[in-house]
Image (cartoon, rainbow, N blue to C red):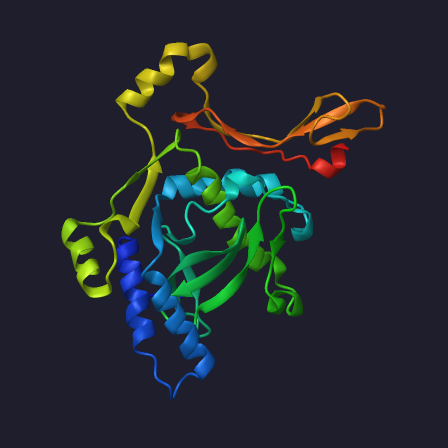
Length: 286
């Protein structure tokens, strides 16, 4: 299966999309499609872009998808760590590709917009306008839910669409942990200045997300080795003994009250990354 050239960074990814959308012909696309392209191009001007390093992406997907493995989309709950880092974001990572109808593999990225408080809409955009579609969205918190577009229900492809949404939630859950990650500038100074001149992008709009691993971090973490020197891992949500009236409590079959503790990230990637292999479901434990 053939594919087009992959961009070397997110700046090139955005330039490829811009080039594709700005040359669309009214003879080939209807007014609604052309309006969607215009909205995407306009949204780029106020978007924060996140280039995710491959190892950060792999860790987020391994842990987060294990947590939700086997669950129905309607049963998935996302905590506040999955919130967007800014109101409108673009996410890209090396190897992010999708197939066109003719089998050609093209580079893609996911853009996400906060449509209301803690509710987000996820959109897939490719370097070819043929790959450009809403993937659904999600909200976080006690009333969180993952939603998919109507076409996903019609063609029984719910998992495909929800996977894109969960990828975003997974990445955000790590980005919102500043003790694990750091952000750096993307591309060369010349690339950022060229993007600013051509598209009006702020030089600060481009961010590369990598692990926060260095001599200073290691020295700080190793002062308390028995407690702190743990590999990065996702601590699963679990029940803890509680008292009646406490927040988020449930009386279980043994007649005692328990409090549900949401999952959270523990350890540090400086000491390795530990994969999760078992993900109990909150409903099964009650």
